[in-house]
Structures are given as C-alpha cells and as structure tokens.
Length: 158
Image (cartoon, rainbow, N blue to C red):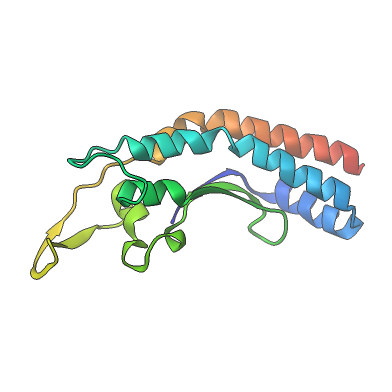
C-alpha cells in the first residue's frame, strides 16, 4: 500500500475529537467532504502516472497497471489517531498475487517474480516510480488547502 497524507497531526486529531464530542452530523459531513475535495485533484494525476509506466504491452484496464489504477483512491478518516486525508494505491484491492505490486513498482519494496511462471528462475524487477514524484510536487498546495479546511472548521466549532 502506497500512501501519502495531505494533513495529519495534532490539529486534525483535535478537531476530529471536538466534532465527535459535539455530535454535529452536518459539520462532520462538511468536514469529510471538504477534506475529500482537497485530495480529489491528485487522484487523476496518480492514475495518469500509473498508466504511463513504461511497458512492452499496451495499457489495458485488466492488466497490472489497470488494476493499480482501480486500486487508487482517497481515504478520509475523522476519528482516532489516524485522522486525516490520504491518497493511496491500496494493495488490498489487488488480486492476492499482486498485493505487493504498488510498493514494488514504486521501489519501496523489492519486487521479484518467476520468469514466465518458472519457479526455478526468478528475477528482480526494476522499479518505475509513479507515486511520490507526482504527489510530492503537489504536496505543498495540498497541505495548504487542507490547513484552510481545518481553519474553517475550527472557526465554525468556536
């Protein structure tokens, strides 16, 4: 699972705790919706980067890259220690034999596989970074937008 947080830390956890204590469903819903809107522009960038990973085969929706595209999503949490908004390529959404593919393709995990299914002959696949190079460029603007959401909700709580 490859993941980047747009905004985490004490501010967000404090606001999430306060919203849960207030039990204001309308404000909670707005908070989640605005955090999701902050991350939404980055999902197509990551998906496009995955589609453009070099390959000898053309891109297909049911191929390796297509499955990674389908596994790319936004996760918004407004409770607990992990309160925040994240963009992730979720290996859990991949077929069982491909769960480590997002990390292997990015290069955060070693990616080995048998040559044409021959379990006697294994190779290490060269990574093709696709995630952090895209998200890192947009990170500052995303964090700034998330901070504005946090500030807005903080004002409404008070």
